Structure formats: C-alpha cells, structure tokens
Length: 124
Image (cartoon, rainbow, N blue to C red; front, side, top):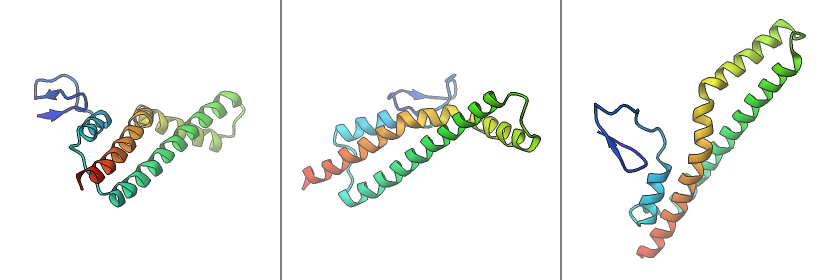
C-alpha cells in the first residue's frame, strides 16, 4: 500500500502512481505535533533543503536559458553548440515536471521542519 501526501492510500489496483513528494503530509504531521526534531537537527535539515531548492531553481533557470538561446539562434548555431543546447533542453524536459513540483514541495518541507523544531521546544 502507498501513502499519499493527501492522506489517501493506494493499492495494486490504483491507477495513479505514488507521489514522490510529501510536503502536505509533512506539514500535517508537524502541525499536529507528530513530527518533532531537535532544533540543531532541524537547522541541518533546513540548510540541506534550502540548498536543494537553490539547485532546483538554478537548473530551471539554465533550462529556460537553453530554450531562449535555441529560439533566438534559429538555424545560425554552430553544430557543437547546437548539440549542447539540444542536450540541455532534452535533459531539462525529462526532469522539468519534477523540478517544478520540487519548487512547490520543498518550501513545505522547510516549513514542516521549522514547525517540528518548535514542537521540540514545546515538549520540554
């Protein structure tokens, strides 16, 4: 059985695949006080999540720049440059849905970790 971030579960007969992100689930757990992290541990996790979010933003910017270069250059591109642009756009298209979803989900994880840290202080 798969647990989804919207609280639903899915079994073998479920049509949609399990989600790769669970931002809403983490927020729900933190808000209910069920997700608790020591402040130092939460800070480390938040730093890593913020670094990941910065990397996702950077990759999406590069993808957009590659698309713009390709569009602006038309047929006047050297073959080696053209190949690099095409490769970048292709790789970006394969992952762009995940990256765009990460832009939405990672801030939820960060907020959940902040709440979880506050939950730790309340339990003392």
